[in-house]
Amino acid sequence: NEPDILNNFSWSLVEQNKNLEEALEMSTKSLQIQPENPYYWGTLAEIHFRIGNFDKALLANSEARKFAEDQEHIKSIEERTHQLAESMNSSVK
Image (tube, rainbow, N blue to C red; front, side, top):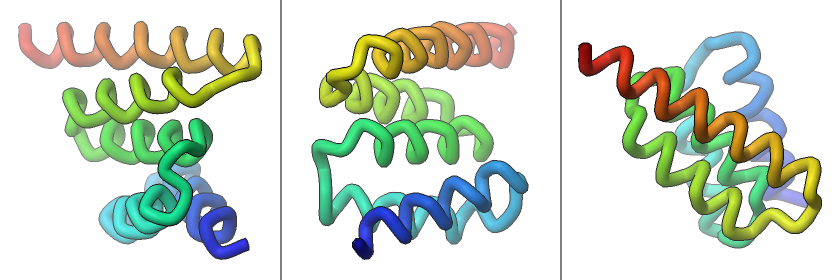
């Protein structure tokens, strides 16, 4: 499944904190194929966060929340949203 491969490889780059621009391209492509996949949106959010695009990270996380169905996944997304908001606030100070 091409979008899964793209997303999984993107996530592996995120975990290594390497080639984030390449991860961003692949993550974006996976979302072009499956725009309602909350896990893909979560990957994109994490990439934007690590690049320092906090606004885009929050927007992507919001999309992940919109499409998530599993309560545990929703809770995880909401916790990450809170962390992203805190990071934004501390970077402004």
